[in-house]
Image (tube, rainbow, N blue to C red; front, side, top):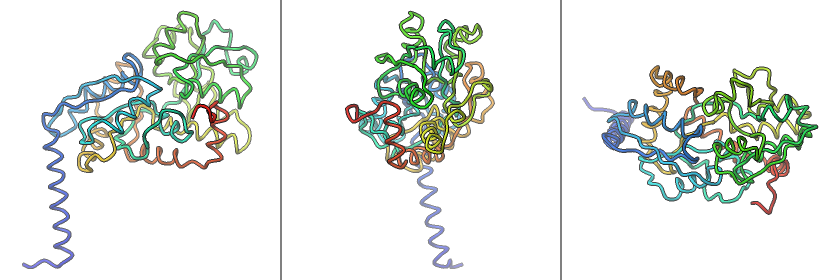
Length: 343
């Protein structure tokens, strides 16, 4: 039987696709893979990375083994710079880092030597809001109190959301948060809160507080007063969203731009140029893992929220963020304290 020309072309394409898929499967078989974490050990990003390292190999043909390597610095940009320019683009290395990385790029923050829209996005694990939280000892119980009482907020650097979000809230709502920068990561900020150096944190998911300081949460020692995201955390129905408190279309667009990153919280990405068949295997394995009962049970034991987004969805969010209209980006820079001297 002779095949028509279109049928021959289709058959050839199918054979090429099958060959590429098989090459991808053979690549992962028995391989040791690296997950780079853009924060120090012990925080939320580290916990999610180690959760993935325990389970993802079960959902990739050949059952590769995963090891975790921490590479903190500059609110995650050090790890992404390494991923973008130095890590092998063969699918054997990927990273998890601050979900605000596309936002940092869009707002021209310093030290960025990557294009986040070109990363090989694998997926993200949750979409919970960032929470502005303060110690009970401040006397602040709601956002109105923060308009009267100055609260020192710990932050990693001038470019991060731990500093940017409190400044954004100051600009939009008239609060009196004062940011103290220079801490290495979330754990360092928490230790500073214990020592009395600072009294709050401007950007941390509530799930991270439940993981890192469950006693603080249970006793009310730490109090959430505002959420920054597209929807509320299920545990914090009575804590307002920033978007619900602002006035006017311009302010709402500004908040939506700042909050878009929350839709890709706990992201995972490989370097640009990973072979498509290998990236598809990683994405498909990630999606299967995020639905697996054993994975979900392990996440529950670790008090880690799971509300995943696919690699394709995360890629769209990153691209939309960096393509935000210049006038909105300019307003965000001004509100969050990112001016020409810090770019």
